[in-house]
Image (cartoon, rainbow, N blue to C red; front, top):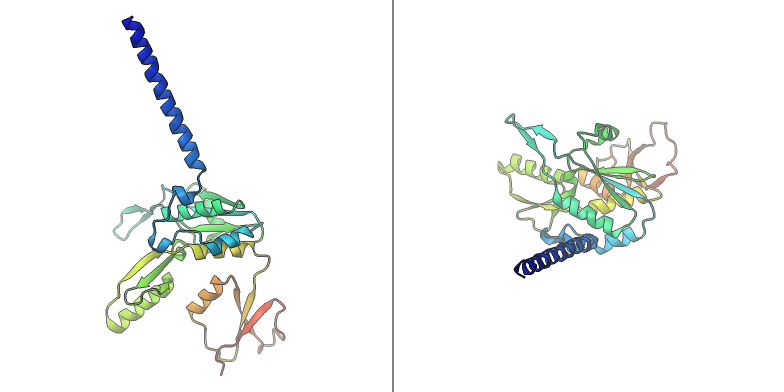
Length: 263
């Protein structure tokens, strides 16, 4: 009787364990099917890793297959100034945000490219200077690349609410250093939604507007901030000279002609 009771208790314990395992498996399957907005909540400052309403509206209109390649290898190392080997960590914010974009649009396919085992991919985009955590957006129409610093914005102390690109922040810091001898402090933010949504819009649009800037009359050059605005609006900027004789008319693909302070 004692052996039978022990056997029954053992069977009961095994049954409970089996049920527990089944519950855990079912729970994992259920969680895996949840949208990433629930499983990977946005914990960045000011909710900067969220797919906003405007982005979702654009994604709803997408009808073109998009492949987003994320360049990353956990075996890639670089040599520091101290002659030591370092690795570049995975940017989890990028991974989580891309998952949310894929959840919001069934036309998006995410792929990881290992630059160590697949150097041919980097060669294809050699002129883009791809690095760890870079992104490549590709459709049958065109492609565009984003570097990790494209996904960041910088807020200078004393100028709250003004989010600068890496180039703008660098220029400001250098200007401050040469004029005052000091460099102001700043905060770095993950600010990728605008760039990723813009890239998706660029590779899926049927046509890209071309903005020509007139040259040959001593026009004042546009600064980098203007060029950034044109890129953000998914337009292409080209120079146009009408005084050399090579071109006698405005190109048919011109969406606009800009003439800036000629003399």
